[in-house]
Structures are given as C-alpha cells and as structure tokens.
Length: 322
Image (cartoon, helix red, strand yellow):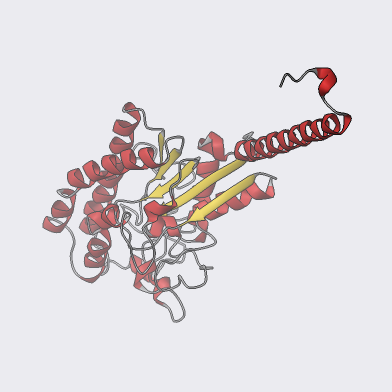
C-alpha cells in the first residue's frame, strides 16, 4: 500500500506531532543533565589526602571520631586546614581524607589498622593528591626513640641513611602508580623538616624537657639532623625524577634546599627561640597522645604547612579559578 501525505489521517498526524514533541523534550532534558554534570566536574575540586602521621596531623589535636589512638586524623592537619580555607572562600571541594599514622609506602595498597587500602580513594577525576610518606619505610620513629632513650649517633644514624635509596625507589614507583590511578591529579608531596635544633639550646625562653642534654646530646643533634636532611633530599630527588617522567608532582618542605629552613620555619624547631612547631615531651602528659605525637608537627606547624601549600600550589590557592 502506498502511503502519501494525503492518506495520513488527522488522528495519526496529531499523535506523530505529540511523539516528536516528547522526543524533543526528552533530548533537552538529557542535554541539560549532561551540561549540569559537566559544569559540576569543572567547578568542583576533588582532593585526596593520603599518607602517614605527618599527613594525618598526629600531634595537632582535634581528632576525627574513631581515629584517636589509631590513625590520628586531625581537623588541624595541613590538608584539612587547606580544604577548609578553600571552602570558606566559596570553592566547592570534594575531600577524601584517608591518612593514617604509621602508614608506609608498602601499606598504602593494603588494609591497614582496620581501614581499606588508601589507594582505593584515588579516582580518575581526582584533581589533587596530598601525600606525606616515607619515614615509616626507614623506621624513622624508632630512630627518634633511640635518640631519646639511648644514643642514636654514629652507627645507628649511618644505618638508617643506608635505607634511604630503597625508600626513594619505592617512592618513585608509588608516584607512577598514583599517576596511573589519577592521571589528571597534581601530587603534592610534603617533607618533614627539622624536629630539633642542630645546635645549642636557645636561652631566655621556656624549653620542652626533651631539650635536656641527657635526652639529645650534641652529637645526636648533629647526626639526627643529617638524617632529616638526607630524608628531605631523598623525597626531593624522587619528586624531581617523577616530574621528568611527566608526572605532575610538587615537593614542598620546611627546607628550602634540604639544608636551610624556609624563613617561616626557621627558629621553630624544638629547643629554638621561637614557639616550636613540633611536639616534645608535652605529648606524654596525661590526656595527650603519648609517644605517637613526640617529634611531630603541632597545630601551629600544620598551619604553617597549610600556608606554604596554598602559596605554592596554584590549584589550592585562594585566587584559583576552578
């Protein structure tokens, strides 16, 4: 049967017009939803914080419920402070914080302290990864404990420095793996700084009992600080090597060059003249965190790191347009 325009009955013609109108409305609805989702992905910043105790804010107080005594995720950590500032400035930030005290490069891919692998937080649309990692791979906390309880100068300091090349290689692999999981992300790798002054105690100011010469001898301060500098060099070199392979990684540290401290951190190590940025034996007082927080950044130290991050990382600066 040949159907012509004249053979289409009026009811059929009316139904066809209704059908075409419905299709048009449906298409517009899909396009609107897609445009909204696209706009949200552009205007939202997806941030993941992962890593160890310096990243979690152990020692900075105000811990996320359920993490005190384990992961110690602090509301005063540099990542949380940075995100809070961005949100107060009207930025839309989707923030996932999986940092956990005690984490090492080797634990990020596995369940740790009853929590899922930190790697699970990394997504393809992650924009920024804030990472603090490395010292637990060389038993730096145990080294610090040895300095306090016995003598870490000489052979112990040499032994820990011998672990640094392997840690650096593991870190390079980690940065590549993060890139594979989150190909568009800027990785912000942060350093640890100088916990205790290299020289003599400052005079005329109250000092933490950890500054007693029976705790850190003059030689322990020299050797311990050399370890801290060598850690910084290792992290810095790993970041530089990753950047050369096309990975968007930025290394930020209290050190300018792994030797000299940045002006905002100068004088704030334990036993120096300015208010310390690190916890000493005050962390051992009743009601405090205990050994886990000794030689870790306090609230002021974490705030200084947050300021440094916002100044140096365009995506996290107050003036950034998303």
